[in-house]
Image 1: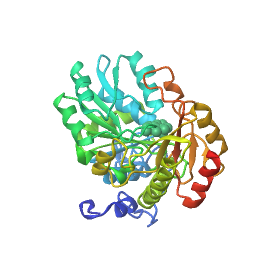
Image 2: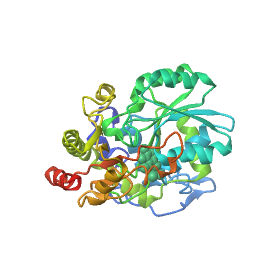
Image 3: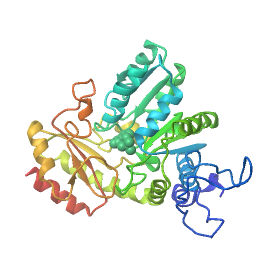
Image 4: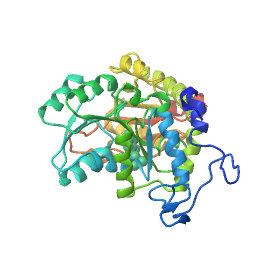
Length: 383
Ligand code: PLP
């Protein structure tokens, strides 16, 4: 397939997914095999030798992810954290320094603070929406990576990817963008100058809360080779069943993201007018400080809405426990709506750190249910 000429929806359904040459199966099979018969010593039949190194189901997913992100190489992992860990240990060495968001996903922060730091990798948290602060942090000492999420989890801060790519490259650092919240449908960081994109495919890519996975994508073939080497050497790969679920999820990513965005826009507007809500954090609201940058680099504003309760932490916890359609659960990006209290749930690992989140904060992962039902549920929960 000539990927240059096809639109996003077509690539999501077809890239890397030719009909199976052996059987004609239209849908990529789940190749549940660890090894492959060779035609002679050192002569693998179609390049496949061992499934940690390469597996056809995973290869289909990896090719599809690369096409959707406009990359040259996609790599699929057992989880988002596995992708992040492989990236860090492949591109950094003990003694290096990285700059990270001051409200990164709690698990990402834990990886930097509790795993990478004892290994010898120093980090500086910075507000990624503030380009001058990022530049200053990069200049403070030689830096291997500038790592950003945009929008961030859970405060929905927006980083200007194109400007940060310039700032990172001036400082001799690579720009890594965690694109989990936006998904490749809403935002394509590699086209804006980022060097590597990270995904928790557990979220919008999979889209149905039935699989845990991660991915790395890069437009630079040499960087892709290095990361593929790290993927095989460390071995935290996506299994074929999980790769198949993510590949199936990607086929409907575009239509899901449109509906997630429709519903989230309505909910953000509703919450912004509610007397018990102190502040709504959603990049689609014109008053959001990152609105202009988000409008420039995102197709729409996505399905995550965070808000702070005027009544403080107790009110936030009460709302989380009173919804009936929004399920109280961690994670995000599935078709069903979820609600959570980041301070005590997803971001509990950042408690007491510079990345601690406000305790009056509630995060919604707005699903694709009927919007009036979602609004009714929030109305009754807010009381
Ligand atoms: N990045 C972001 C923005 C996330 O929200 C998450 C998980 O919530 C991760 C990375 C980690 O991914 P996983 O849970 O698949 O390991």
